[in-house]
Image (cartoon, rainbow, N blue to C red; front, top):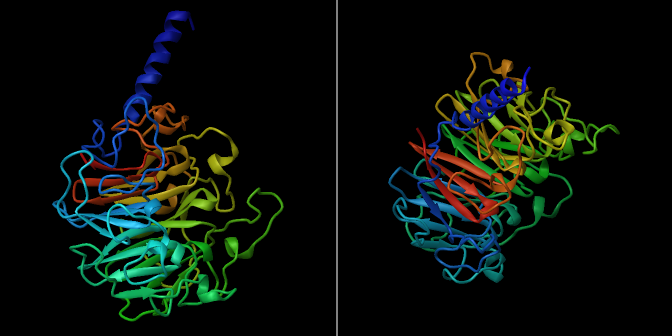
Length: 411
């Protein structure tokens, strides 16, 4: 190959990789609206004092309808921020706050004891019929509002994981888990009457067949563990080969974080094993095996980016967020600061370890720098994005490393 031909070939590869970045069903123009403090050219994202605008390390968000309301888990400030209507301007201030006395205070449980309106590292957030569900991770509980709050500091109606709203010990102070306890629960999801909770510290997903109506109501089904009392990493299987110290399987988990349903199939991000697990339909038995994983070539492999420093089109590094958009599954590949998308296949098992079909946040599949070049955030860049949830034609992305929420048009 002569020099001219080589340059032409290289240019074509670069162009193809650039085009690949826009295969995801997200506008190539980037976010239409950015919530949080705008970063000027001489600034870098830093921890921010609370206000009606400033957000610190958000982990999740939920848009009730395409016109609002919008609720955001402002995780670092231990509160929820609410917008009455869908925000239309960058840095638009929130209308409501839950978890603090006002927009300008912060602290775990509002620097007091737990209650119906306090929070301690809120993360996952989702709707449940007419209501709202929030994973209050460091209080080791899930809060349920029977109606989506339409104001500040409206008290929750139901608590799961604890006997009442005033207790917050992991697994209610015991060394073993139970069907009615939680430990560092980070993700929540509601689908066709069922409530799913990523009980991260217990390395399991709990499922309630109907939305709970009583405090501390026990779950009906468990994934990731052989029973309701076990809580070992990857079900307790040990090996000296992996740096993680435990070996994965088609049924085990290490650091489950987010949940969705894609074409009728349950999907769970298993961040600790650097993979996404996909079941055939919704499991109906305890400890059911998934049929495919993304991010790894085999069920028993766990290394980040498949054991090398730089990612590729089929690897993941601590994937936290996930949601479905039509035929697409979009994964927040958090530690690689990118979003990857896979298109639906006629056979779920055929997706095992396959390459992603699209990418946003990096110029190619082998890059992993924050904001694409370790620079300032842009409208189409992310840094350690923890969550993505879709409502109608709007993707709401928790861009945690940039202390902001992206409202991104689906095309």
